[in-house]
Image (cartoon, rainbow, N blue to C red; front, side):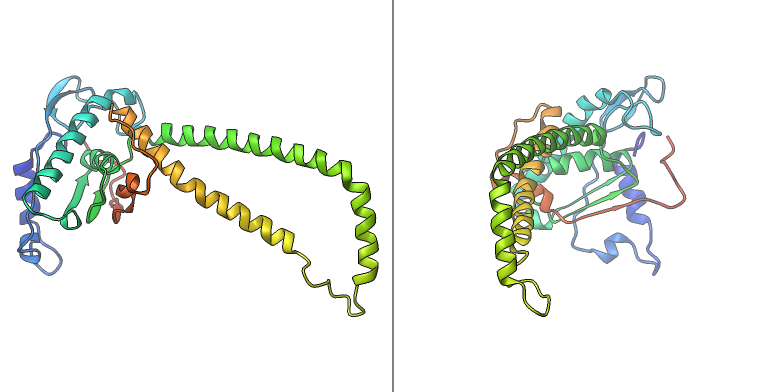
Length: 258
């Protein structure tokens, strides 16, 4: 949390009790807890007063304001979190047994660290935070979707023009075919509607194939933002998105007080 430090926060969290009176260490006796301390930085919100924070920002009401202030801190914090994970793996801990957690600003920075990591973790828990640069990410995705729709509309118009050139002859043949195939009970002939099903299936297949590409593009946006090298388009490139995640927020606090 802003202004606090790892040992102080860790002591308070470890001493807190669940509804049945047990502490986290009693519930998870073999689990190793790591509470890193955020670097001391000058806080724009606190009128440039130095304080422990994972990155600088100028508003909690609208975290997207002057978002460029967050970049340096997000880069440094992401590198720290990634190194902690790698150190644990080097000591023999499996990635599947590593759970990344963040609260408030720590939630925002740990989400960023998770999505720019190149492996799947055991789980992620985020509380009372937000997703940095989500508006810019959404704007870019919307712009790309608009371009795709325009391209598809142009292709559709071209296909319609080509179809119109042959429509007279096809309509005549279809009318003759209908006269021969309509049954007394009024049912459509076998095979009717197959073109519609095929078209729907093709669209679903196309959308499914675009999903990984959109995911990789989104991850590369986050990486480029903090000067990380881009990832490739292979299936192993976006394993972090397969990490089980829980995101929550308290009902009584709209934002965490500074």
